[in-house]
Image 1 (cartoon, rainbow, N blue to C red):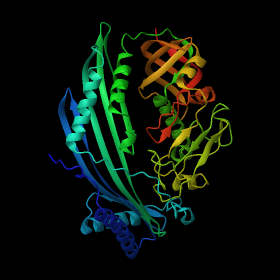
Image 2: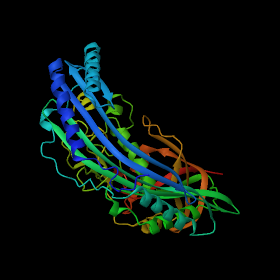
Image 3: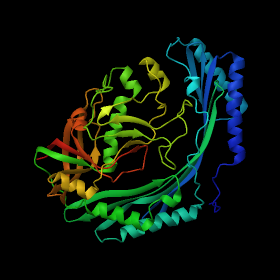
Length: 451
């Protein structure tokens, strides 16, 4: 097993080679007769070390690369991908894409993003922080995390393991507008999954930490304690009686609610008329206190990017102001379909953030008084066309602002349109472990189905 900590870092030569490949493909596509071309290329390297009950289960290395290219012949497009970056393989991929474009029906909405929107001077967002961690050190970290978590309480009887993951990528995007952009990024994480047992049965829970910079990961001792306490809290769950009650979505679950909002404002759902937020621009879609921004240039953030996957420059923008919808999430194709301009969301959103209020989590519980705290959701009961929402959940019953006991085997139901309009408060316990960021969300009332 390699012991050097630098076993997986991408070299300067590899990065320069990737940029050269992108430039060569663009040049060659023009010679073939394509009137526009775009190329997305990446190198990725990393490993994960997984342990369970103090023993190494797996160590997995990955060293990947890929090229995806799209050529346009008139208004017709053809695409191809390759994981082989040898010249012959790339020539074959390019020829295939060109032939597909020649055989495809024209689409008047197809094409590159507008040249004036390209990210000419993009900032360094401090996304690259390689972790000089040998595989042995990663295994030791994982074993230590699991050991501390398992020894926290005798009711923790088993473990599904702990893992340490470190990953770096180098991305290059170029198109025939003359734009070529490239940047490196890293992502590291540690997680621990436990099982606790008492006279009432067994429960499972976990904790994890993830960051661009390994120095910003939660300390092992703290992570082990979080995993243990969250698992123990689930013991002796009860059912709830059916009724209408206020509901708090814990921050990491609330992120999923915002994800449904993103789906509803995404261009592909809008131009297909399959969104409950159709034709809602400049209309109230959230409660008045709600502000949602997109913040693509936050240093080190997991959702940060200097440009989108079409090379479009990104900038901070207001998506929801005082509850009123101010913008969609569009790429160039969906924007043309809707007669609008791209919002720089080819490839997704970048740190879409529901701005927090001034209450912490404890104060949010006090504001709710009596109601349900949701910490886990199950099932796929979300209809973006109608907004209907029905999920199996587990969490905790709260009385007088204090958590009383865990609950499970219950369902909550409502409609996303009503849920968004009935948000009472957003706490300041913002979960930053993804490209959507929010604190815990209190919704005035939802239907809870239990006994």
